Image 1 (cartoon, one colour):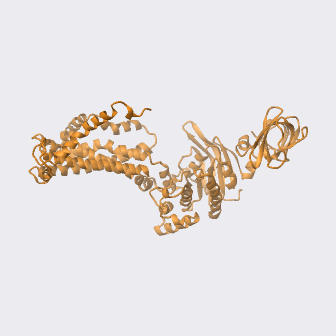
Image 2 (cartoon, one colour; image 1 turned 90 degrees about the vertical axis):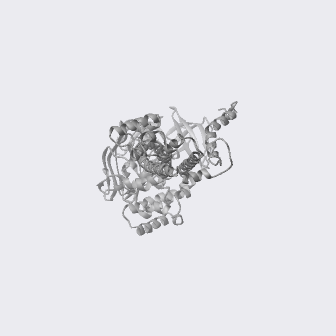
Image 3 (cartoon, one colour; image 1 turned 45 degrees about the vertical axis):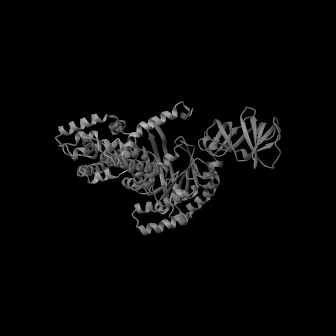
Length: 265
Length: 356
């Protein structure tokens, strides 16, 4: 096979793609350290917008939104991880059963359905069953769309753990539950942690679905930022975006590292 | 055999996977303290039978009795049998000692007793210094011994071994064979050992069950399996043999009168089930010797030879075109020229009429 790198124009095309992808992020990050109030002119280095995020006039709003965001992300990621783990056990250990393919499709469906459709459907659903939109509805919606993200690393990990370990455990007088708890669970732990972190960050970042089901007065960080931006972009938005970017990068990197360390063992 | 206590009785065990039958009503009895080997090519059902005893497979019919009690309906964790797995299946996230005490703790042993017993078993397999290591830090041979220690620790009524030596290299495999055998003697536990390696089976076993296509072909001590095979499959699978087409004229008890190719008549031991008519005679290559043309039991023509170091293989052809192999020990006699006409003598009592 011809090495992709030898195609004419490979290098400039790559650079262009990377530029389009990452230049906006870099600009946001750089201008969050801008001294001036302008978002286009550089006025020297300063941390004042970061101070502003925590102490400025919008600080209470952002703080409440951040608390909501992290509470929902931790809760939703935990629930999604539990459900995804159970699903992975069924899919990789229960052999063949009726509706297995359908179950797999159902688990991964949220990845395929356009998010706006899920958002509208969720809102309609909550209204139909008479649930008041608020933190609870955000939480429920997040659990649902986090499941496939948690499921992927968990099932990948589980497929790499041969079932002979559980057989060995049961051969050594472990009940099926003990075999799961003492053998399979520890061996799957890297996948589970990886799935949790991925679900956490997906929940933390979500805007579209949250915006539909959040109800009046309840904000998460993404919706709070969007609300601020509507009144004009100030550098404090860039500072808070950069912080969020940092959390994302850390979580995704951790998820990847844990997953990889698990694979190596 | 009847007065010896039976550790395991396999009674007409049938195993079906959908429309495929892996075990066709297999029966055998394994005595207390016996080193019993299930031998056969891959796909013969030996591993399936082992997994039925361990409880990883549900039998489709028949009974498996452990010290008289039918264990076929029990789940694996309620059977007092332990398994040494082919690739050991040591728990990678636990230390060697934790691996070895795992079964004891599940059986309700106290931590201290379990640890003492664990160290005792590790001493038995000479791995005391490795108690705190992880399985990943051990060599293949050491892992194999940990797997053995782990399975022996709870003092199972029967130990099942699923080709435990196949992952080791040749040198190590030979060393481990005698070690395994001595541990078996020391513990007095019945071993059920699965292998496709006939040398392993012959050197280690008290008795061997040769299996093929879900049937038991023959059960007996190694010497009997090798020297008195009952079927073509056993004669062919264990060691090297010559199968000679003969005409059986008469069978009386364990002796048959038959006609060799070329017309010579001879009497020889017959396997149970041998009948008059066309049959097969099994003669091991080392039990044939050369003599002058016109003498001996068979007339043959020299074709070719293969030098093997300790001995030389002489490839012969009979008048009817059948091929024969004669093994000549190094230094005993000269190798005939290709095309030379010879006589072949069958050592008295060495030929055996098969049941087919």
